[in-house]
Image (cartoon, rainbow, N blue to C red):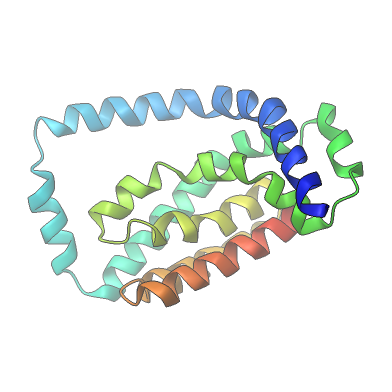
Length: 184
């Protein structure tokens, strides 16, 4: 029964929040896409990926954590507008637990970290990088800067252990769970 309510809430959230999120993210993503298209003519992506993979794991984790921090900082205002809009106060009165409600917001925060799959592919961490970005992003969207710094440190740990894929994804999933609690 609660799963049915969470599914209905997810559909309502997607209908109400995703248009605001895409309006907020579109300018930055268009610029990013233009930069990638221009760089595509100059960069040999397979060589770049091999060069990044040849670096030590701690250096890739540090670079990934910096990327996660910058990504969270740049996308947090759009996510905040999508999940904390005054016209969406109805959603916080639904008969759902806090984590069910935050998971109903999953379409919003999953869309916000989706482009990190490409950056993660370059760093040989295609799923760990976006999973690690969820906690800092949701912490900044909830105006909790200290928690976001903790999330970036957690992201560095998840990316350092990203070669051990299950452990890195587990840390990313725990970060997503904590971030979902912050939003709720």
